[in-house]
Length: 84
Image (cartoon, rainbow, N blue to C red; front, side):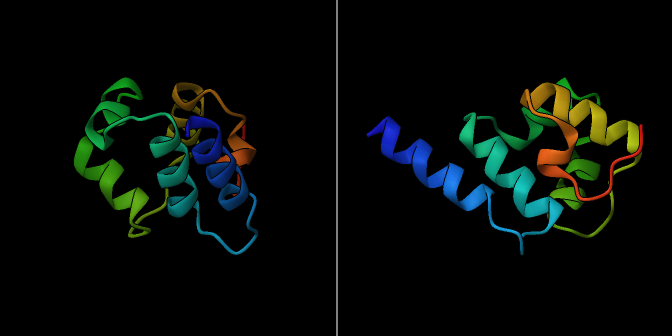
């Protein structure tokens, strides 16, 4: 069952029409992380993280890098605009 779930997440994450928040949600759920836990590990206020995931605000370049690091992915995997 785990492999099937992983394949579903991988297929969904490759869609080009997803927002950054939707991609974050997929990657977070893929790893079984609660939103508050990801926010804490990335040193982002949980309310701010929630707004980023819902698409109500954009993550700063620093937040993008920290979230990607915690998720174990390249920033480009989750975010459309990445400045380093």
